[in-house]
Length: 588
Ligand code: ATP
Ligand code: MG
Image (cartoon, rainbow, N blue to C red; front, top):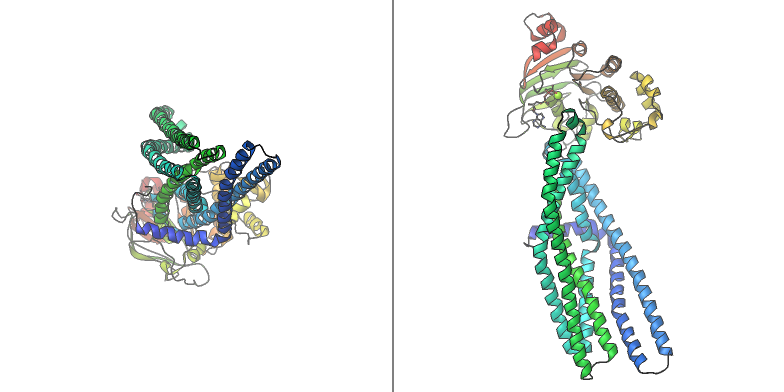
């Protein structure tokens, strides 16, 4: 009744998951099983003591056995509570241990996927996979099987004991168990869809708020507050009736459950009264039956929620399986080594489109850069400059042609090899929440502080560094709040220096910086270019003066390429015109 379609592939996936994540934790699993079985046994024993107590008390004999029975009852109750606590501990522990492993695997997998995957999937949906879906599975791992089996056994045990009391009581209660499960399941079919819709609109609501909070600055600056608020009102207006209906449904489900169990109690009473009148049942036994009927409510409820969890786990498992099965379009090569010294770069007939069936962003690009030289890459916005940089780092592979680094196709390298040799300083620097040290070394603790300080000093950042309250331990918040764009760039330069790559790509920020930062950056760039091959995506003439070679891109094609000095002297060149009338006039 829980799984809408039996899917053999999905069952195999459960198998894989259980083998990979649950079985290595067999020890707590065994403990959990033992604890749950003891808990069931204890729950079944206690009513027997009560029955003994009641029947003995009615017999007007000595009080001693009553004291024993009372003491025993208390002892068993205490042990049962202890067992429950221990079982919760093991099940929670097991759930988190197993799913943390899965979380790590998923996060690592997401990080290894190529950029086109990440462009297609919002961070929100990935968080939902790595956290939300895994949480749903945690239920499954920690308790599902043991709980389902445990509650099944408890129900069965109660029924067996009731049959032992009297066959009629057994039959009536067995009918009750089946009937109540059916009734609760039926009412659920009304309530659950409403509840699901409520959760959807709730997710939308949080998504909206998150998006708005992130964009507060833009919203206010552009006077879009009214628009944002009207969307907010519209959302809340949609939410209210759904919330009311969802809770009505929930209440309905809850009250039916109570009603069903009340009917069960009534049935037990009627049968007991009838049998008692005929002298076939003692008062103690009547109480026992009543107690067991009450006890039945728990496993019936539990089995229902367990089946619900299974449904959730089903959906999550499918999504997680899909994610894990996604192969990165960019795969590690067999591995290759580079000759020492600055790299050379060759783009041979590179044609590239972001979408396989979309328009080509780069068309038949040929570009050569000799070892140790600096290429100034120019072109109007959207001409494909950053795209070339992404291809050099293999965030994407070109559909046609090849990218060569020191004569080796970059698809031959392992990605980690390539990315330790090629560094990029982008237009947007990603600052992580953490200390300045963490941000510079990216948590590579093999880099000693002395080396970091050396780089900071080499880059002419002493003055800036002296201004930091806690030196390398100064905390930076994520997104780089508290850092200017220029400071962010300088930090990024320092990162590059610490990895000491053979090719540096500098995607210059197109925004203007203040003169002081600008002069610092100029100095830092000078140092950066020293004894390295470099591609500068330049937006300012000052930067271009550093380049040995110039390439101009137009709509994904190289329209001019040559030595800077020669191009500057050639009156027919675009570059010459650019120097005469300014970069912006020629490019835009
Ligand atoms: P700018 O000077 O503004 O930084 P650019 O020359 O660096 O521009 P690119 O970022 O390389 O330009 O973009 C080239 C083209 O590719 C643009 O038309 C852009 O719309 C498109 N493009 C860039 N990134 C993506 C992406 N992730 N998915 C799809 N298309 C993209
Ligand atoms: Mg760009």
